Length: 423
Image 1: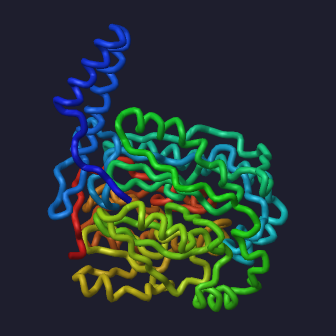
Image 2: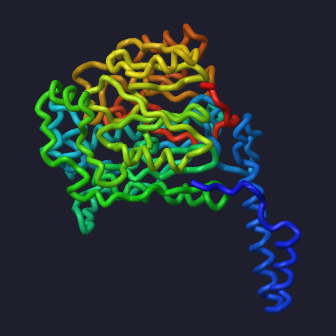
């Protein structure tokens, strides 16, 4: 992807604006001058946020509202999702492939209906408290718009109801001063972007870049309609063979399958992110960023941040139940690999859309502060033993909707510069 770095305009641009205005009249002169000034300012803003391939960039100016290069620089602004009006997705082939057998009855019974309302009420209260704690820690909090997800919609290729706007990490990826809107892979999440458009448009008007990845049709050809899953063993075998429910019919990806470490961004091929989607992202971010594909011993890969979570420069959490096949890549680079302790969440607590390993799905507020589950004392001790203070928050009911602190948030601005941590 060609990216022009130089400033446009200069004295010749000013002369052109003056000449056009003199030919077409005073009112047009003002418009041309304002347009030129706006273009010049935008170019200057883009240049100030541009990447120097040989060294770390200077801090992004304060008037650049979006800037985040990694998962651990000091957090200044974040989007936190909403549980309001959350609906269970219809039990389609892509949902079946991403959920555990013990929950299939739940989807068959409640697909296209609201999640249990008492549970939702508790989840909403937990996330409100989480927002209050983030604000107390000095973080600006933005929220998506409440939307009625019960509305049934139809495209030329499928029909569905919606789901929620609970997990901004799934749909938004911030790379530098650019917000990338993911295309998604579940039909129930096709229109999820609508909840985030007001806040994204605000960032755009204030100078941020905004990119929407190609939207898939989500036609039947995108999914293996005969994906043969009956047991965990089936899942392991298929994943080891590189077979997933999503085909290569068209690019698709969820943003949560990517995790950032400065110039290096890591991604997994999963049930919702195909190789075409990874290649689209690789081309889009080149040459400033390097996209590395990882794989894991995971029977149900979907979203990387409860399997591998980068928590600091040269510091990575690696799920002991889902070992990374390329973990030596990090070790050879001098990184410290930490295996988090087993989670404590009880077996009878409903986790309709995730595993217990949400305990490692933490949010770093900076290199020395982490937001962690209030019930998960083993991982709290792990962090404290490596010099990271814990901010303990209870979102146990919110976990049931499919995410931990990292999932429920998308960091919009972190105070830092673009660096390479693997050279």
